[in-house]
Each structure stands twice: as C-alpha cells, then as structure tokens.
Image (cartoon, rainbow, N blue to C red; front, top):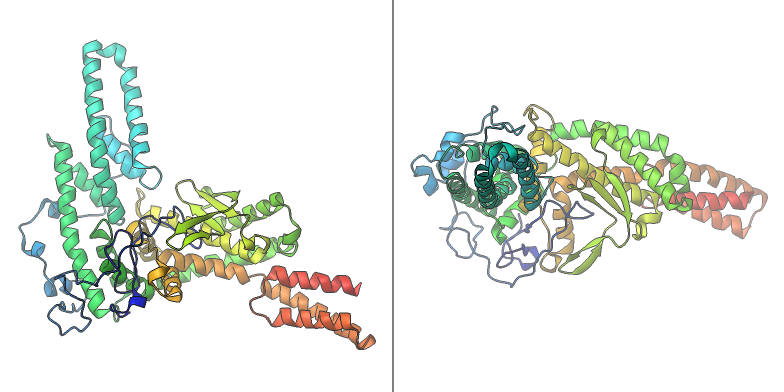
Length: 529
C-alpha cells in the first residue's frame, strides 16, 4: 500500500477537501472516455491540506500500534463486526432489519392498476435507472398517467376529473423528491436494487408514503456511513494482503455506499483495493474462451481489411468496424444489443490538465460507440480495432450488470457473477478519475487501468491490437527471403539493401503495427516487380 504521507502518492478527489493518502480518486459518473467509457466528468482541483484520520481528525499513522489504529479483523465474513463494532451495532433493531434482501424480492416487472400513480412511477424510474435521466422518466411516466386520466374524463364528470387532476399533480411534485432519494440510493448501492425497491414499497401503504420513504432512505444511509468508515480505516492501516477477491468486493461495496462523494481517505482505500484486485478466476476462464473465438474470427474474416486499411474510404472503414462489432457481440451472446457506431471528430474530455483527446467512447444510455476519425490512430488498423473492441467490451459489461437485476437474476453460481458485481460497483462513485497534477503519472495510469471495467476492456482490446501482427510478420519474412535472393544476383544494390533493413526491422520490432508492416511489405513487393 502507498505511504499516505507521500505527496506524490496522493489524489485529489472531486468534491474533496484535500489530497488523499494513496491511489484513489473521486468518480462522479459511471464511465470515463477512452481509455474508458461514457459520460466524462471533471475532477475538480482543491486546496492541498493535511491528511486526516476519518475517525478522529488526526494525522494518519500507518503503524497499527498507534492509538488511532482500529483492530485488525480476522476476516470479513463475521468477525469484522465483532472486532470493530459501531454505534449502530448496539442500537435497537430498525425497520431495515425487517426487509433483508432475499431471492424472492419484489419484481421490477409490470405494475398493477391498483397501485397509486406514485408507486407505478417510482417502479418505472427504478426499472429504467440505467437508461433514462430522472426528470425525463418522471415526465414520461406521469405523462402516461395523464393520458389515462384524459381517456376517463367523460365517464368521471367534471368535479371528479378536476379532483383527480389535482391529486396527480401533487403526486408529480412529491414523487420527484422521492426519486432523487431513490436514485442516489441506487447509485451508491448498485448490488441492492431489489432490496431498495422492497424498502420503498414497504412504505407505500402508509398515509404519508413520501415522508416515510425518505426516512427509510435516510436511516439506510446513516447505517452505511458507519460501515463504510470501518472499511476505509481497515484498508488505510492494514492494506489488502491476505484478502480474497470476494472480501475485496465486499469492502468496495461498503466504501462506495457510505457517502455521496468520496473523501480523500475513501478514494485512497478504493484505489488500493482496485490495484490489488484482478479479474475473478472463474470469469477469466470463461471470458478467455469468448475472446479466443472473437480473435479467430477476426483474423479469418477481416484480413483483407487489415491489409488495405490505409486505402479504404470512410464508408468502407465503418462497414469493416460494424463487422468487428457484430463478431464480438455474437460471441459474447449480446447480438441483440449491438451498439451503433458513429464517426465523430475532436472527441475527448476536459481534465484539470486541459483537453484530452480520445480515440473512442461508449455511451451506455444511447447504446452508441463514437469513433474519433481525427485521432492519430485512425489510419492504423491495430489502433482502431483496439479501440472498438475495448469500447464494445464496456457494452458487454453493461449487459452483464443488467443480468444481476433481471426478473430472473444471474445465479451466484454463474462463473460471471462475482465479476459482474465488480463491474456494477465500478461506476458512479466507484469509478476513479485521477488528477495527475497530484499523483505520479505512471501510478495514475496503473490505477486507472486496474479498475475492474478498465482492466477487462484493456485486456480484450490489447489482444485484438496485436492479433494480426504475426501474419504480417510471416509475410514480411517471406518477402525478405525474396529480397536477399535478389541481392545474391545484384550484390551491393543500395535499394535492395535498404529493403533488407526495412523488412528486418519490421520483423524484429515488437511494437510495429500490422498496418505499418504491410506497408513495408507492399513497398518491397513493388520494388521487386
């Protein structure tokens, strides 16, 4: 774990009051552009200030023997609560205890006509959480309620109709307030959507539904804050040695749930967990099979496009990229949600260090991948396929997360389940946006790529990037043989000697792209004819 007192190891999270003690930062959106995902968010610089302990306000001491150090829990399964009890542990049972999540939790399916309009709208908001901004969802869903009311106007009479319209307007105002509570709860607790719905619906039969629901959400948040700080302290003082991936996942969930904005200590703890958490082994084996099938098909079906990429028109390139997308989506089992590919110019985002261009960007709510045609790598096939496969991998991650909340949710025995929960947590406040002005650039890049979603996407894109190079080098080796045969017939020919050097360099250089290798091969073939 990084030394919390080293300035070079600190982060400045968004909304924080100072630098944090380690590799963490504050996310405020589910994704970041390439290298990353959608909806970039600015990391706001803040004033430098001393690092403080989350519990006592004193300077952090990594030495466990200091008075401020919490007791080291033996495990996260049961003794963490025994070792580091919080005030809420000894409090009287709350109404939260009556609504523990179970596999038979409330469905997010169709609402019933007997439910109040506010309940039907709230369920719609929760169901469409990942797709629609709150205000749009409320307006559209209440618009449907208004249309239904209009259709009954003639049968109701004017007095009853006006009374129903006033009640619908009041529900619109009150559910708007509740929606902000529920969506915040959903962002902070992405693995507990069904429990949150149960909590909200458990208050729906009370006379003051909105007030009771707000109280339940507030009580939920207070309990999570205590639990979050115990997790932060554990990571700050003891690091991640000896923790299993499942234990790290639970700590990540606890840290994210504890506050609406991560403070420096929480961001540092989260970054430390991401650095040490690899992909789940069961998921890795399953995903490797998918990626292998994708690469095999790409090399078989797009070799010609790889060879001719610099000469292809924009339309021809887009057609080739659509084939790459279709192959990858088919092998991942998500052919039904293939994203649209849109060419754009000057794609990028603002950071504390200025405008940063990016090669591609997946927009989850629009189900669109934007490809930057003005990016320097646009004329290199390896770079472009790396970008597309990377961004489409984020599309696959989005689908995996959605399976956690389906009417028939992904079973915990599924080899993808644990990794899907990590993807779900690695958005919103769980997605790290790093301020390189207060962190070593190499370390910032390492942390960024270690996040679950980015670790997976960089792996898939990186494999695709080098997939065509072996065949390109084989052809370069064959042409090099022809050049040397020609040199035997014409010793000292400067043109042939230059071709020999160029081809030898192309074969030996591990970083040369297939596009550049084929360019050298084509140049040599033209010279030999």
